[in-house]
Image (tube, rainbow, N blue to C red; front, top):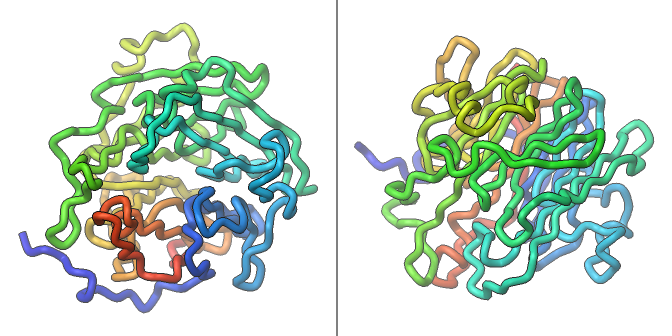
Length: 352
């Protein structure tokens, strides 16, 4: 197979939404009125964890106090990992700082401290915090909560947890959480898969390859289907949310309801649109693809700037917005050498 190189690809339809110099964008979500939000992990140079993009510039959300890295952790963001705006225009903020030994970011200074996990719900009609959850039943030493989707019909949140190799189901009424499908063939990384970019395998300085269990997730707009997959796997899976909501079902029961949607390749983030398309970000060939309700896998955009496309949001304006985290170019995976192509950016492309 001919190796795709970065210099070969361009898409004139791809638009830059905002640039962030050396601040790495991770989470992206878009409200019903096309307000665009972008989150950033707590790593140098850190200026804010969560922002709203206004006229191409980021503005701290909900205010600057929440971004103060030196403040009390009870009233500030510690490490915003993902954001998601539900059908009622609530902005859900997953503040996730795993224990060092559970992080997928190749931290060489692993310690035994517990992780710290919170989910915040902001009402975008008022920009006020209305909900907060602390995951009381989560294994804080092993968990690495990554992405979140919220089912407004069942009042549940579904979160991917590559640390526990499972799906966390959070009850938004009583705050209780449980983990399902742990260490199943649908949620575990395929250890034979090593990501490779233009002939370079993605390994840390000890030679350990990048590997992530269940990571990207999507929830259809009718709250019926939940899609999920590990990064180090090629098949996409889905399950009806009515089964995830049933607390009486055991993992062995749930596995029987999982549907294999076929080979979609190596992917990172997932998101659904109003037509039932599932978008998948793919770093190996600089693309964002979508799986149609009919099962057809289509390329939405392919461009040399699409470097580790990550989180996405679909606006009512018909645009797909997505971040490029450039993970494979970070020093962690290049013997300490920073190969990132600055500035970090968020893009959009017309899809509807």
